[in-house]
Length: 220
Image 1: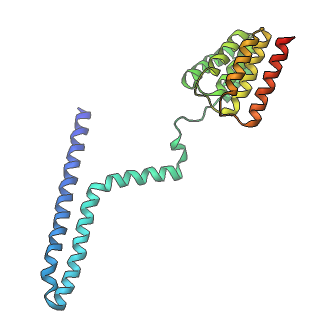
Image 2 (image 1 turned 180 degrees about the vertical axis):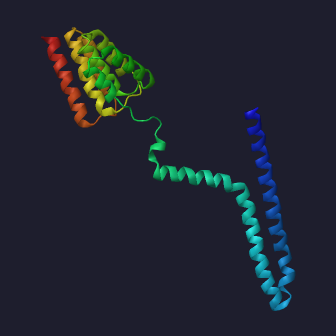
Image 3 (image 1 turned 90 degrees about the vertical axis):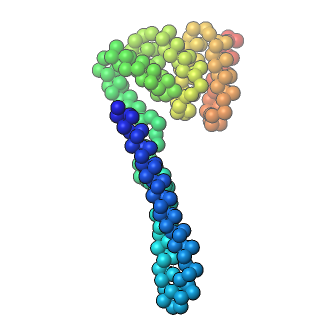
């Protein structure tokens, strides 16, 4: 019933604005048509014509505002929000990982891991979440296989941010590959990253250097 009431109110508002536009604009146009008769009546007629001209202009402007006013109001509100409230443009709020880091430092590892898994589900593109989860697996939980799978899943994703944190994840992943003798996997990972166009020249240099290290380890 509430939705139906909102729809009825919306349609009624549109009808009222349309009637106001037609009435005000029609009155203004009628005044313009009568101006010719007043201008021929001497000085007094000219003054009256000027007053009526202004009045007709106001009527037409009011009619236009009756239709365009809501659109202009929404546009101005959006502009003000963009100027003074830039955070309103953010699709997602900034992640707060410090509480999770605090739990890891306090030894609450299982609870921290549960929160990281939930953050991974909600923000699969976030590099910081992946890094913290992989470090937790490889370090405090002594589970390099889960760290490997976490990094591999992230690096195979298409949406990843921020870009500057991706190269360190590549280094962590290829370290685990080299420890397990997965040289081809490490090489293909780095080559795949080098085909991306999002990296700076400095980051690409780090990736090329890692590719050289993989090649030497594989030949040894």
